[in-house]
Picture (spheres, rainbow, N blue to C red):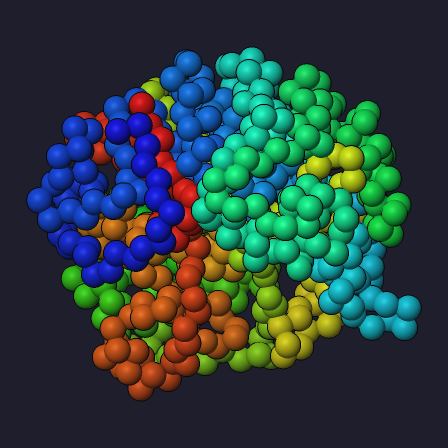
Length: 583
Ligand code: GLY
């Protein structure tokens, strides 16, 4: 089957099967290349398996675009370029050219690297830029103004990755997105619902209303949706590479939009933008190699810290949704999130103690502070943690040679600032909202004013995005990641735990209910009915404040069967239009 997608958001619960992780290998994924179920495995309509390459993203259309690149002989980085630009057309809530993100690449020979294309603060940014005329912090300036727009990194990031690791002509990779935007595509159900829900948010900007609505009305599922201004922007990127975005017509249009809206980004800021290749954060977990994103994302450091703590417990023998399992995992989360807020920021401006935070010795110290039968307190005086948007998107790719690419990128809020650049057809991010609001202002509303993440010219704001690759004995095992703001790190953690300790197939590992703790607020959020009632009651007796947190993340992932090499794609059914597409 080439790919399957479904408009139904379904939740497969408690269908997981456990086995010791001689486990992952013995239990394997949820299906085989021939589609023959392994006894006891869960098969979801969002699964696909293939012998050569696989792309899993939030948009089945974009996954097909990436797959076609693989079929034509492109590698995983080529497919990532094509998928990302296609997502900017078919998944505008988070797919983008006006945002930024991170890519983790594992080459077939086992070497790994990362590409940081996080947005940068413009050169006139200041630590107090989110305060009003009387010096008070303003949430509106921070999150809902043209000052909240960071210099976009997406085009530079994919151009850098392609230049170093791609092998297909750039024009052929961007061209499908140009056609999707100019010829249009049939609106899938999830997009129709999303745009209808975003009408008030987007409608305050005439350029956004014109781009995303027909005469002000939402598109219906099945309508043809064309984006001519975006097509012209994508054509400039296709024809001129990063120059087509950071210079010339696109740059002029973006700078003009900034002047109109009171934003800071100039053509000089765009010309100065730089994506960076960085060494990945690495850890190990029960013999598996964990390869993830370093700062300015907090994701890789936090997931390695949590896995190191949890390695000290025999999670496989503890019931997956039992009070003790949830307690130990939540306590690991609590500790990693405290360190995140204390230490992490842009490594070009601050030097976080990465070696210590990711060491087994430090994890042992933290483990010793976890009580067997009681929740630890989270004291606001230690640090407060603010809100972070949960709208982002993740995609995973494996090619025929075993090159793996894990990409998470974002506009920050769903549809970013909500403002389309007039004449250029793409949405602006509001990523500056991921900087701390005001130096020294830490309060119980969740504002944090610690130094490592204060806005400065050219600085990148701290992120939670956690694109991650798992390997073992030199072989690729899985590609994982998720959107979800702070919850991203905990979603990715649980997918890894489900695979390694739960012995689940990849689709079951993705589908399984999730929970989230982030130090402060001192609340254990669970997906709706995500934990059995007796587990919730036991956790409350231990001192946890358990709340329904709604759906958590969409972890579009790939597992590589170590016996057969089969690539098993698992699109997360929490994303209505998602699809896995392989060959
Ligand atoms: N804007 C969400 C993140 O960077 O984690």
